[in-house]
Image (cartoon, rainbow, N blue to C red):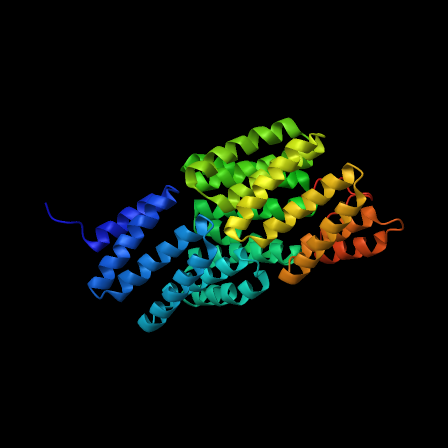
Length: 365
């Protein structure tokens, strides 16, 4: 029996990745990568290297993913392959964003978009529009985020790109939640979930289940929220995506906090914090610290609450997470004897964020 060719191994990796079996796909891509290198096939090497980067990124290994994508950028430049270069640059941008550098990610993603646009590769352009939208959301510019998600949705619908439609809808849902448009949030996530169920997209199902849980949480329907989070937890466990799963754990901790189960909430925030530390996700770490501050405030522990909110603000400003900085400002206002709510409202308006009448409900979107 003859050994499989590098192309056959690579295609097996592609099929595993399409089913969100990232650990299996990663091993296959690395095997293909080694085979392509031995045959001195730079194009195959580049494609396998991008696959390695994708799997590392999807499982929360962001630094290693960035190194793989950076090598793919070099190989694509040597091959004079604009679409391969675009895909590699987008990977670098997404890896930078995940490591707490959203503003540094924007030029990489924009360059990737322009390369795709010049090549008339609309599916790739749609993906980078979605990536730009989610990055602008992380930067706290919700108006630009929504505009990019809408453009991504239009392109995906034109191309009949079902996954692209689903992820654009999820992007719009997340931005709508931050803007206080909770009915839109529910509708977008439900439409995305229905689509992902239809096409069998495992990662998309996990993503939209978590979103539906958050939509229910913002409506104070905590029983429904926990049912959706349990579904997301199951799918993320199957995928092996620590990074996204950590946000589900954070959301569950928030539900426990809102229901007054402070010990369970504290335990879950600690679990989420550990996951965020493993993936070096600074944004997630800030969210957990905000949650710890809220827990302390609810229990009348003003000093530790103030410390947690102040540290959250310092970190959010350092990494360029403007929405999270707004939440930290609101937290600090809660513990001040004479809070400056006008300053908080101004910060929220600048980002396009929704702020409930003070004091905030401590149920961050």
